[in-house]
Image 1 (tube, rainbow, N blue to C red):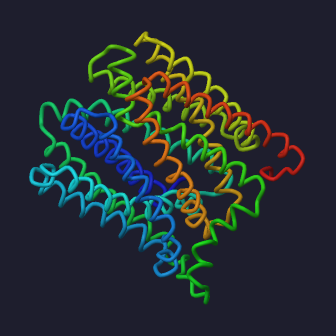
Image 2 (cartoon, rainbow, N blue to C red):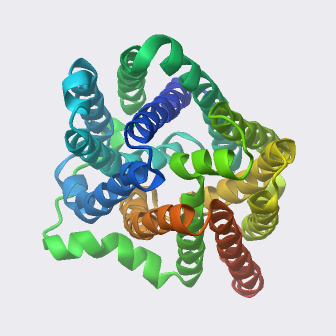
Length: 405
């Protein structure tokens, strides 16, 4: 975990995490204030999900043509360029909501191609035995800056306006491009362009094949898809409606809710650092316990009208989800060859984007026409199903010993 490559990547990942929060909050707030509709505001994450779906399908072709390090830097650079154009033309662009959604679509393509690469960097620069600790460290800092982002962005938009807030976001992205460039220099020589004579169809299906052939990875992916569907209950528009209708609080509580969750995630990250060796030995069991606790806390959260209790539940959700997430991330990194990770993450991303895109629209519909509480009750049921699958996987793991070394 020591050395320039890890620390520069750590800095880049943290900058990107903060920039993404600012971007999401600025755009979501703008669309909601302009349309006064949770369903319309839900189009933002829906467009992101659709773009990620298409990007995931085509990413293996891109990964074949260019080196890992070149794509890692250039895709993030293109995203920074597009957001710079959005900043420079923010007023004329946002006068037409569908033009803004087009920009969102293009930016989401850059993210859909680039995120599998970002998720695949850590095993290239960190020894296998330190992956849980490295993933936890990355998670702590990203969650910390996301707290700052959720807390700071609302204040910044009110006092400085959309343009100034978005300008800070653009600066963060350009800084992350520089940091990624530094990181890429340390493994660029070890990454070669694939030159195998394979059809486009074969290339596009390699990641799927890896997931399908491993029974345990199939089940872990199914759990991720289920929790991905449940995760749409936390999109900004739904949380905003929950704050107003269920908690009867003002918009500032939107930031409080998000911040409290990430505070809990920081605690969870610290916990995973202390118990990293235990998690590394019991990856699947960690996923199971984390999912079960997360489902219970989510159900209570959806039923409460007490804003203080809601904040405390968000804090409690953080460690539960963090332990599950770090364990799942490490399981993938350990059991898939580093050169195949981008393809596998891309394939997994297709599933998540498809399910998330549909569930986002569904959750927006439920929030508008049934009630926001029903959204969180439904989400808790989904997470509980994932927890059941986790415990099923524990039994299978005890027989096959797939994730133990």
